[in-house]
Image 1 (cartoon, rainbow, N blue to C red):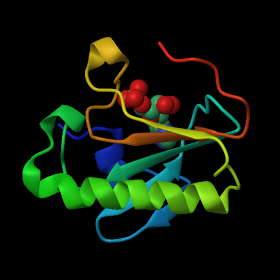
Image 2: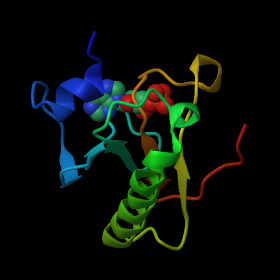
Image 3: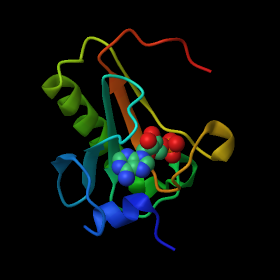
Image 4: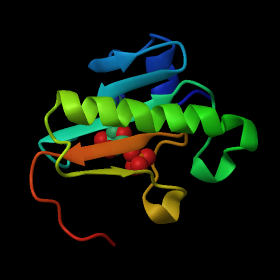
Length: 111
Ligand code: AMP
């Protein structure tokens, strides 16, 4: 069964894309939790951060680089949060690896 992000990656569901290359797509979150709330999504089918393998580490590094570039473009590089939820207990609702990039206001404490 394909999830929302797999449909977006396949072009079957529209999304507001802010970055795309062969390996990664970044979109605006449909329900933003901060003035800037982007999702950086590797196209490779990986359920979550706990499932990444050694061979995926360059891809994860590239996601971090994309986050840096987007933080610069959206002028939040002086204060942003990059996070991923792993598992339903942590709040993961879409089981395809993605990183939230949040900023644009003073962010509260975590947990
Ligand atoms: P998580 O709860 O960590 O799995 O994050 C899933 C995120 O995806 C949530 O912040 C949702 O608001 C967001 N989301 C769900 N559907 C869409 C969609 N069609 N386009 C953009 N963001 C979405």
